[in-house]
Figure 1: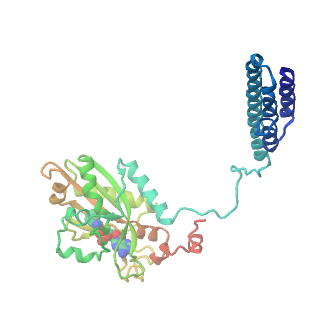
Figure 2: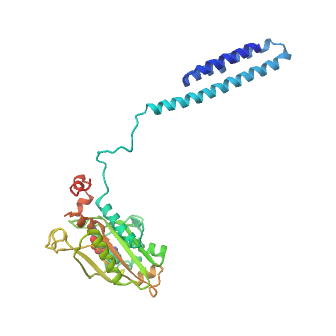
Figure 3: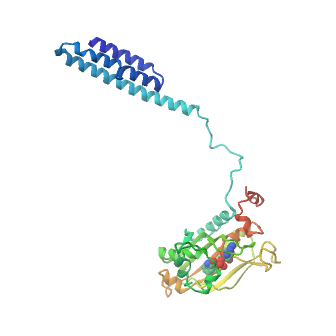
Length: 342
Ligand code: FA5
């Protein structure tokens, strides 16, 4: 009987060696180790063996069973690997490094301008910070010195959420959080999407981009503010552009200014872009109000600073000579092509 068992073991080994698929392996497993398999058949005959020899033969049979099991397992793994390799070899290969002439899209003009402005300010030591789109009423208004019922709130018709929060109307909403996070000295810009329930026209959208900037330290003055604004505009437009600074009122700055740029679309003659005034409001700014510094945890006796709220969408509009801001939100790829952006 031991001979029969050894023969069976050898036969199984040979046949397992010849198997070429997972199916073959499964069939062999059933044939040798299944309930009605060859190993069980032999074990059935144990009852006909004298009891003294039975134990020894049972041991040989079990060893044979283990060995067949092990061989099946090893072959199964080998076949699996081969099948995987074949699958990979037969899959169509794509060379991701090949050049393509497909129309694969590009950055949005506002994003391009935003990146440019970020680089300019980073080169002057400013960090770029993030703001939220959903904001608390406190951050958007109260922390920038616009308490409830202040008439300045009327200038920003706001989208309120049912939970009492709002879609931020201005990037100034991040001022308080950033002052508390970094303290002084502080040099930061924070771009972001803003939302207002506006009457739409060529220079007003309900969803638009601003870029806020703040510099706070000892002895920061209006001269610093004008220097940074001038550097920004000459770097962006790569040519001298006419700007004017006039007094402007914002509760969070004192004194406050409106920085206007001569309409690059009509050269200042007046058109629908500049509402026939020849100038476009681009970047209100001013010296940060002491109340705003205090609310941000900064001592106004020791420090001063400037803040500005650059209209990024309008800047992109001027830079690309677009005569209607709404084109930028239109998702019309033809307009990108016209701007020379592929
Ligand atoms: C503000 O939003 C102030 N937070 C800016 C500021 C910051 C002042 C820090 C002082 C210190 P204003 O509402 O004017 O200000 O908006 C700022 C700029 O955003 C505008 O000059 C304009 O360029 C742009 N802007 C405002 N409303 C719209 C709109 N509906 N569509 C497109 N651009 C807009």
